[in-house]
Length: 265
Length: 265
Image 1 (cartoon, each protein chain N blue to C red):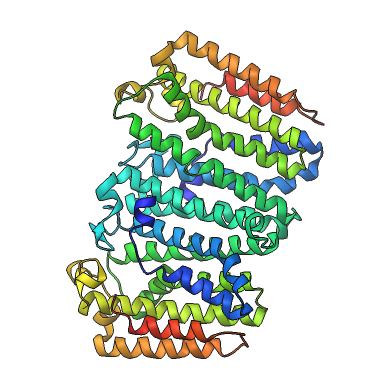
Image 2 (cartoon, rainbow over the protein chains, first blue to last red):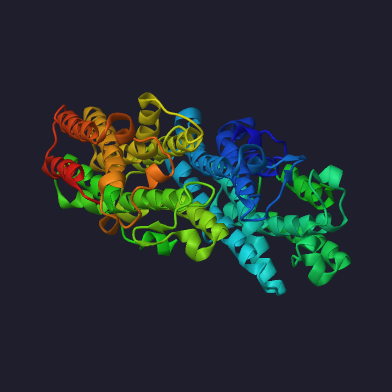
């Protein structure tokens, strides 16, 4: 569990979560209360990587520049480490009220959001569609389903949960969810582009693996240039969605959206 | 997910959970409120079986008389089905307040118990110790650790969660937890005995698999007769633990303890 948690990574989802809490509440206290939930979202992300890298799934040997979990500890331990990381995410949320004074109703709403967005109709559903898709898709519509759920849902969760910790109104939650969904899709399209055109050293993993595996991606369906235009358009739409509600300090969230669009790893 | 959930099984953990709620509250309403949590514990149990049966783990082809999940759907889908079952268990708990009027504080306490008892220091930890142990244990102490966590902890959770739904006092919760831990250990020793002496048809899985895999078990360490005596002793101790607090209707729980000791599958 520690090996994969400490293997680095951008910590993008927890950063988005903290930024969403700060956008709503506009003060330090929001980050303190959001920290256990930020840990939870990174635990979920890490478990999903450990399981996705398994030989029966994407069969990846490297992640974040290091050997994948099962390469070091074996498949059985990697499966169990993933299971325990997933379980521990819910511990972080359930312990938050005692540790930080978060209201139990809010913590429970966050648990419910996470089960919806990380489960069978969310992240796991997206990964399942991706695996099944390798057996012969894919229309742009199917690909969008995969990306929206496999990647977008957990990013949407991060923003929603940050909003909940910050005490967001319904309008603010809707706005954050839409921001997250657009941003999540943009993020995954960007990932597809980087796999094709990026620098393996900066990415910490082999590039060209999508082509090698015959995977259908946005650049495959639309070309690289049109995919880049799509990332820009989705990022603009995400930022516009954030303007549909009033936030105390949305600047950092807006800056993160631009950072994500311009990233090279 | 449905395939493994509907493959049968004794539903022992949910039955224990409902019985614990009824023991504390002594009325029908307890069962209604306990039902979503009873579903959650069966979801967790089912996910653990799906993952434990994987080729990288125990590599079992049959479970409850049917081909195991990965035999039907492949390894990738079995891993994902397990992940989604685990995630959905927390959905059931988080949705309970809206569905049945369970207090959010109680639901959150149940989430926390589950993460403790099903996670790295609970059920998953027991399974990890079991897998590592195959590489050369095992003292009786190590074996007890494995059994206590791999099997005992989720049974203890079932009783604790039932107690929480029923509105148990601290003394009642302690009593239920001890009852569950003793019963869980007895259950697993009984499982070891049945693997050696049971009827494959009644069990729905091959017998003799522990011996075939060179697994260290209670009968291996103590002999069958002494293992049977241990099951009886643990069952008596469990029942005695239940008498350390006052319950409105403990009869059904006590009867379940006897049923578990006498079961042949």
